[in-house]
Image (cartoon, rainbow, N blue to C red):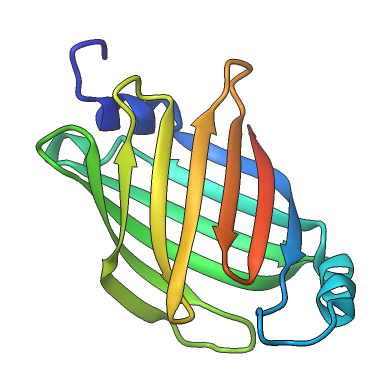
Length: 167
């Protein structure tokens, strides 16, 4: 709604299920020699499929949004996360509590207080910072004019892009 803070408007606009093809480029660490392995792995793993949901209906009035992500290749789940996004009173900051699971592990790992986001004042773009493998993954999510969401993720060892479309 027009009078709501940017974070409320952004997540309400994205309510629902989304899917897209993710192009992944792995980067070699600066100290490593040769980029052949990273190039080969990038070709093997790309494209990936990303499925995500945004549930801004159940608890948004108390400032909470439920978000899920599943990244897969040929039907095999490579990453899965369930997140509770807590929208700050300032209307722009978001804290993230995440439970995540990686390949071949039946267990979820809980991560609290290390990931955060900031919604732009126009409610069209969010900048995220996620704790990932001892580093930081930065993600820019843009709600495009055609209704899709463009994600660009970067960490020292990877870059990924995906355009999500509503299912």
